[in-house]
Image (cartoon, rainbow, N blue to C red):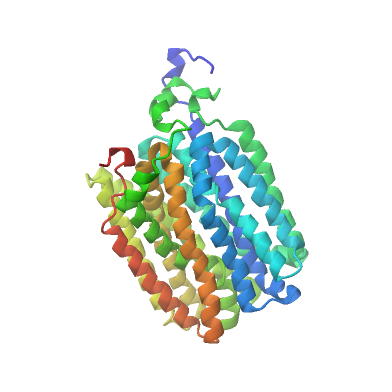
Length: 427
């Protein structure tokens, strides 16, 4: 590491902000690759001769594979560092993004999306590990807010981007195109990032003084699995995230189809409307993070501040989804569903910053555990909706009632969550 003269160390360098920007770009790529299938689904169903249930499985298996590999991905980041893990998993899922354009039937599509989900599973637990290492404690909610703002806005604009791209090229070539972006990111990140900020040539001592110590963020520590398993707050974080993901998965899977079939919108207008829950969700991430910061500044404890914001988010999302079913005009209805997305993501900074504080140097494993259970709930969403619609043709309203009730279940979990005390400080 380069030595810096004390006089030049007064002003901290800002490498941590560059690292945050890398994370935001990857969040954009992640959701670009993940969400594009929802807009391409009708054309894929037509060309491949898929039924609703088969398409439901194709949309769902991503979530199952994503959930299954969350904990291994987070654990590996804690053991060997996110630099090597992220480079490998991004290359992996980028290949299978492109390979989605090469499928020929339901079985090949389901297999490809399963392998795609397995790759993406390593993303957010390792980015959480990156933030735990590279950010001061007081910057964690804001960083998570920015990360999920980037993710949601990527998801918001992807349907519209895909709709226009599909006018120019086939859905097969579209997946190939999107697969290139992750490859570029993986190469740039591996060249620039270091698992230990002390080995980065551009970081000065003043910035290092802001960051966690080497002991607090060191890779290679043995994960305390029994302590994680005994933590009521970790279990409740997992359950509430499953409730959150169940409602949210509808926005990136069945929503474009719902708008065309139940609301009679055109492809492009439907894509524009379908972007609202994710667009407003990104704003919700930043607003939730800012409110937590303000509450803490007003001498509310971090535990209570996160609890308040999360409960408001869950109850607000539940009310908006219920109200959505009672509005006939598609534009006004989608504004309400957009507000549901806002309140859904209002919860995100509390969830992920909580994983960072609880997990510490095991934050990759803890956040991977939460995301695993959350995405089991998310994976159930498109599958259950497919079966509901098969058993009750055209009865989309029932699917929204189920989502509204599950959101309320998530709010109950937060009454009992301590989303700050580290595992190592718990008895």
